[in-house]
Length: 53
Image 1 (tube, rainbow, N blue to C red):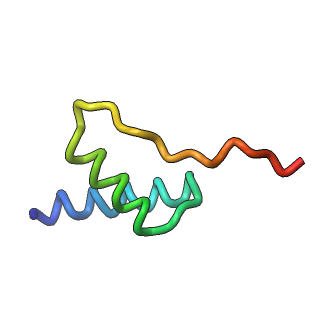
Image 2 (cartoon, rainbow, N blue to C red):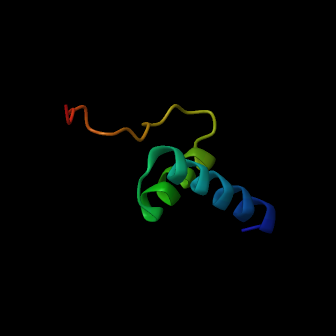
């Protein structure tokens, strides 16, 4: 894998982890799926719909 691809993967996974508040492994998996399937819609990381109020 090229350095440019790896740096893009790491940047994207950090962004996903920060926005979705999920684990590092899940964000890396999601970033990998996004980069591999650029032209395909994939699932989005979301929190469960249960409310704490």
